[in-house]
Image (cartoon, rainbow, N blue to C red; front, side, top):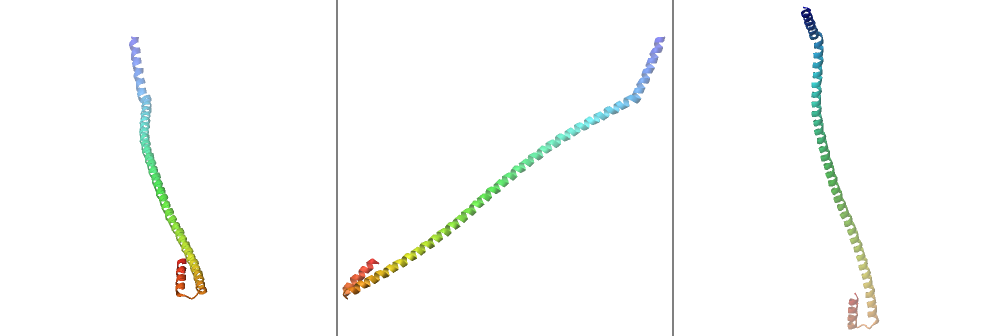
Amino acid sequence: MFLNATLYAQITVFIIFALFTAKFVWPPIAKALDERAAKISEGLAEAERGRQSLSLAAKRSADTIREGKEKAAEVIAQAERRAEQIIEEAKVQARFEAEKVIASAKAEIEQETDRMRESLRSRVVDLAVAGAERILRREVDAKAHAGMLAEIQRDL
């Protein structure tokens, strides 16, 4: 009989222990487990948002790099256009300067030509005077004068 009373006592203590555990011990443990599960799910959600944010940041950085390359290409194209424009301006300026030099040279040649003409006129006058002197030194003869005049014309 003692065995049955002990068994009943153990069953009663076990039931009291189970009720005590179910009422006072199990709820905080279940609550802690639920909180831990919630934190884990929040962490996983944050990790997923982080991955999405990372992929978005990667896309943005790729877009920024692409835009930077496009802007760099545009700046290079503008620089090339400006260089071509500067070269064209330099060519125009060089043509203008060349035309000025050519005009100056032509004017100088024209002046030199005028000086030579004046020199030739002076020489012609000297030759005419010399011819007149020769004519006057010889006899006054129309045939002789005609020969002298022809000689003067050849000298001119």
